[in-house]
Image 1 (cartoon, rainbow, N blue to C red):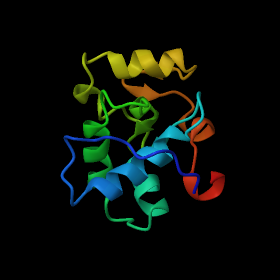
Image 2: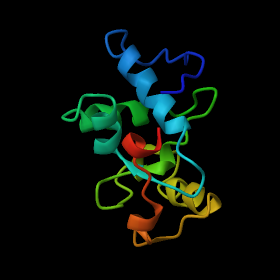
Image 3: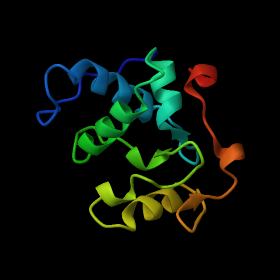
Image 4: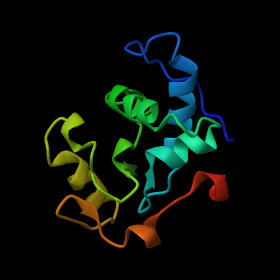
Length: 122
């Protein structure tokens, strides 16, 4: 896996910092216009049952530098389940649309075609 410089994540408990930083490294590599899901990231990191922890990492990622494109991580069905953790309820969709990803009714349009699997791509 391509490693980026360590992230300063003061709000992340030290016991989870390495896992969160690994999640951040993967998410930073999701190409613009593509999306993945929490489970795919957890599986790639060797912790397939830790989808929820990936979600916690995404919640802790807002405001970090370099930025984490958390909008590119959706649930297994392409739903924007993390949208309420952004500054506004519409920001996740707005950022995805800026990336070129269409969203209708809080779901990524053409999710299968836009899906990025870190196990295959990295």
